[in-house]
Image 1 (cartoon, rainbow, N blue to C red):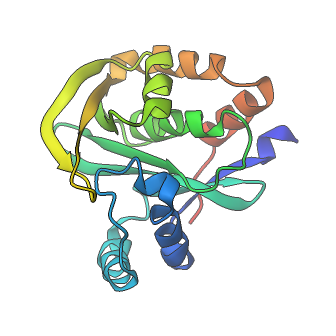
Image 2: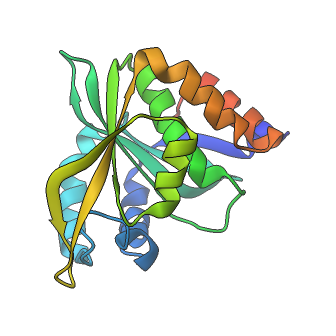
Amino acid sequence: MSHELLSLRQVREEDRWVLWGWRNSERIRRVSTNDADIPRASHDAWFSRQFPTMHDRTIIVQWKGEPVGWYQIEKWDAASRSGEWGIALGEPNVAIGLGGMLPILALSHAFERIDAQKMTGRVLEINTNVLSIMRRLKIPNLGLDEVVALREDGSCARSHIFEAEQAQWNEILEAGRALVPSTLRESIDHVRASEIPQ
């Protein structure tokens, strides 16, 4: 069935080096705030520190049973029920529209699973692909971040700040569902309604 093509699971120990490889790919580094190559030892130490607490906040996205990307909920504040989301498509050759659905999967997790009230996302101004997706999802753009990211080549880049609130979620979701083929829409609805296994 088409809905079985897409699945989610919690991050596992076996993902340590998959995440490192994705993060260091030129395609992802180019649109990351820190575009420097991450040394193996640094990633290893970071993963070991973070892994005990990242199970329900870092989610691996799978296509046909294979890991293809991830989303994460960061800087979560339980008192205000707010945080930030981050996404990345690790494997480029997947179903058309899947990369564009990563924000929907991340926000679905935030608003439907952990009862977030407000979520913030940052997209570098050079990441025209994701900026276009955010516009089409109708996620409000608060403008450019005042913080400037220094790039490895000495240039600077700023991020657009996007903010979604619980009250806007249904409208964002419907805009996202309208952007993709019906088979992918069915898959997204299925994973939103399913438990996320370890």
